[in-house]
Length: 542
Image (cartoon, rainbow, N blue to C red; front, side):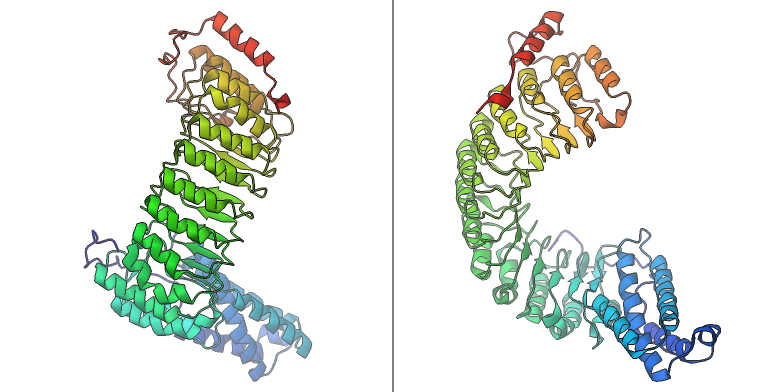
């Protein structure tokens, strides 16, 4: 409900060639019926079929071609539908020819019919492409005409990126109600932008009542500034769902009260596998409500609660609840204010997550205490971990041995992000040494803004450059000398694109926390770092 947008906003008028009108589609069916049954160059060569059977095939062909072209339209860069129209015509011609070439034995016709129906049953109906704008009743009547076809089998719909007013909602409501029993996925994200709050709430209520009792597996209500009022406007829909597997409530103004409403109105979560709350104002009290939902999600594999203003108390509550989600594969709780205590509590939960493949823990104020606890926990679990992000957590050299020991055991690691910390040379040298030949899937490492100098940068680059899958090393924003830059350039001379830009590097930078550091790196300092590197053997740590 973006009240900053004028209520009089109207979409810029452009010529759109897709989708074709229902009348155009019917004319094409009649034309194909004639081409399959009347004398033509192709029917004389391959044989014709009766008009009744031709009509049956023509209808199936048109529906299949429309479905295929509609999916192509989603990827069309120009957005006017011209290539979708061409695709549509080409598919119709190809399928007509296939009917004639295949003869017309009954079993072959039934096989084709079955194949076409199969495609129709998996059809995705999407009106979100094109310009983000208000949608008018007459335009919507045309756009939704395929949903009114009694023979349609649409199971997935997306109404995102178009703003519905009361008039449009009254058009869409009965249509959705008529097909709700066949729907499995509904995307209503960003569908009331620019509407006054009262109108937006009425629109949500109409959609909620239209879809009540449906058996959805996927529901996306993101980007609607719901708040508690919006959540409750969808109450009959949410409360009626018993098969939900994916629920998205991102950028929805989910406050403490709204989170409590979600907990109340989504009672059936036993089948929930994906739950996303990104970019809300949930806070600690709201996180407590979300934690109650988590305790009812034994099958959860993907949980996102990033940028939700959750502090230590809420972080502890979420962590305790996550300990029961033992099927979790992806965890994203970055950009909150957990602190050390919540980090330690999270580490206790992570020991139960052997299936984790991606974990995003950046900007949680973990410091060394939380980082060490989490690294030690992950060391003993999650053998298939592919992504580990812990940027911006005030992690110092003290935590480096634990991080290195953890990383050493993650042979499936693809991406490592420890940027915006304070690992310095000693910490990064410790971590660099664990990148062995077993890390052959590693693609990306980010150690930017860690107060690195020449020796650590060079050693890290040498440890990564020859890995078969490696794509990018980011060590920007550090204190690498001009000589160090030259060394890096030489290391990456065969693959310069694998080294991220160094435009924010400060060769004259000084680490004011290091009393022993000077304005320049002398050879003695480099020798000392090399000695430390040779003496490290974190792989042997228990």
